[in-house]
Image (cartoon, rainbow, N blue to C red; front, side, top):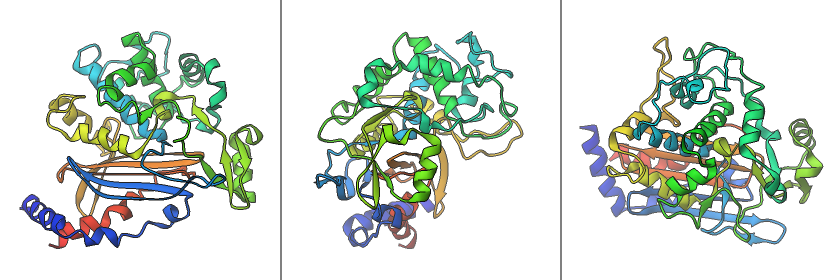
Length: 372
């Protein structure tokens, strides 16, 4: 059996890990001021590689305590929180969202499930305008921000359920749903029911800790500066580091529920491990299965998207995945359920799309598994 072959290869790989040492990071990683990559199983860090500077100007080297913005990986935390509410029967996946938030009168009814798997048909406004400086955080209110944005985009651009269409608005709505159902602020709920439950509060949260926060960097050239001028106030958020990089001043993401998390790679590793356990402290086995099941459209078409997680395969080995990217940072988190493995990479260099760089970071392991 294929699984038996993987198990035997895995045992042999543990006895001979030379393949890991020869792994070369892809070009985008090598060009980043710093990166941190971890390959892990349920109990062991199988490979850890980090290099570069979390702060170029002060030559502060990256270390295991360095925190990065996780951006859209936060969506998986929002999905877990929603599934926790489903377990408690406070909501149901196929409830129309306006049955819980009466002010959200979308032009066509949208369900919680459709929001989770990006089949709502809502627009996806450019999110780079949706940040504020850390120093302005005391005056920022997530709930008011979310409502003000959502109420401008109540018209579905496609029929709900008919196709996959990624939108940060889906997770703004889900963040507000969590607040409506629980009576707690979104960040407070995630902190209490996920982060503190896993005892990760020292390495994960929605605030950048002094001394551990990696400065975010962006390429300093004419084209990149022109593009940035279209999506944010450059003088307010950026400064010139040198001829190669622009630096981002410390900021927070306005849309906490779609991209606000700040953490170390170890924090994401422990979070992933908690979801790989049969006795997960976060969700029951049947709820995890439901969350990780690929969702089809109303036309029966595969979407490559489960409830909050993307699905995919590398060398015929299935995985669950989410990336997070934006100004100054990029990250990816992956789980290989059949192998009991996971991987994470975080860097302080802008990434604006799902690059799937873990394909190349993990391939030496998977090649070994297939060839033995």
